[in-house]
Length: 82
Image 1: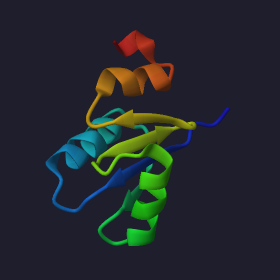
Image 2: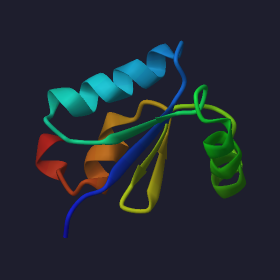
Image 3: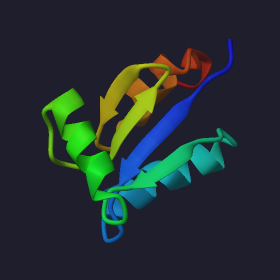
């Protein structure tokens, strides 16, 4: 099964950058959706998660909120790194 990761971010969000840096440092590919540039995506996101904050990371259909590397690795089934 191929892993699909989408991170919803905002341009000036330092926690968003931490999340992207973490995944990049682990060589884990992801798609970024910047809600500042795509307000319709933000509205869809809020209707799915009922949260306004970013980052919000979707890993194979499961949500991780904020910068939570342990939960991300659990969702990615990479528990050997924990």
